[in-house]
Length: 225
Image 1 (spheres, rainbow, N blue to C red):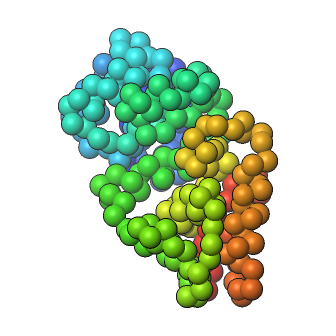
Image 2 (tube, one colour):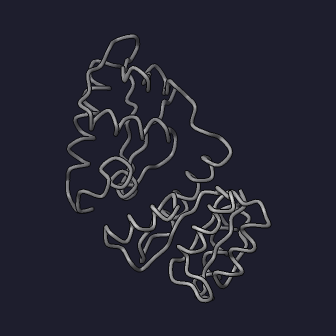
Image 3 (tube, one colour):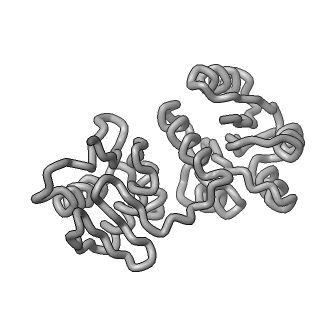
């Protein structure tokens, strides 16, 4: 994977560049909005990590300009502005994800990996499969071992997102932003309640568990033969 970090804080940029490279990701750096826009327009990247407050051209302006030029590289916005309205503004400007500061690098890395898988591989799967669990995105039917499982709308969205990212850790924040649309405080237990209900429905009376809790990180749906 090749990414571009557009960040004017040189210390933060050096840390991110080093951390991404240690994770096996090719990482380049631009120190201001104009340089970032030029590099992102002229080179191929899998993901752009863009700080919102930049000199010469702010991050949202960079993203809007890229989209206007037909550059659709996935963008993750970093910002000290973390209110709901700020995140919505960033996403509407063309960002694909939004991570408020301060953040844990492990979560940033997970989000970048998710966006990297998205580039160049449009999500055209009609049916998601994890082991003997199947989710049909057209009919909204869920079956395991051929047995139909009835889910409530939110449980379905939760399962769909988990299966879309099967084998990868999905953080609580990612679920709040992609399944609950920012409507709940990150400290709420709404995720735990829905995960518990979902786990009961897709695992009860079946031999192998699929939905795993990754302590301190989030959740993962995965089939272990």
